[in-house]
Length: 124
Image (cartoon, rainbow, N blue to C red; front, side):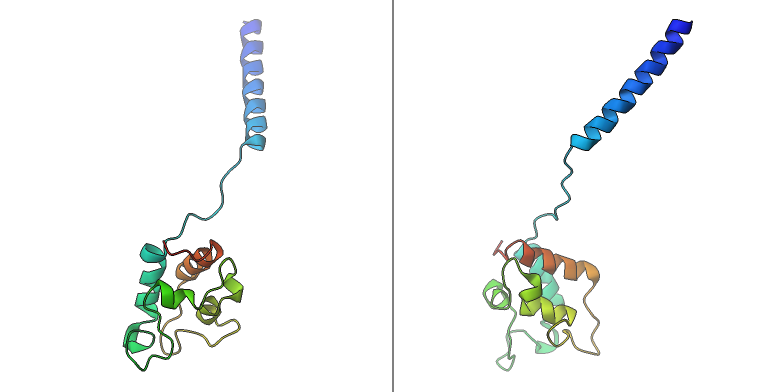
């Protein structure tokens, strides 16, 4: 009986040590998932920037944000803080967009745009 008890305790200790050692060597991917311009970013811009003809296709829209080409002009790939698009969305370094009385973009939307620019602002 004593041998079985010692074996069970040893097995428990060995299992715990293996878990600890394995957790120290296992790499966990914490990088953001790939963000797509077409399916992730463009819907944010269409829903928050193109309303009331602010940045839509009308001739009087000073800055158009209607497709990849027109949006990418306002982005510095791999540098969200250096991108006028992101600066405007956050109000840091540029006029806050969308302006009052419209609601600010959600933190989730801002993170999506941030990650997209940080991942190279790709046309994907």
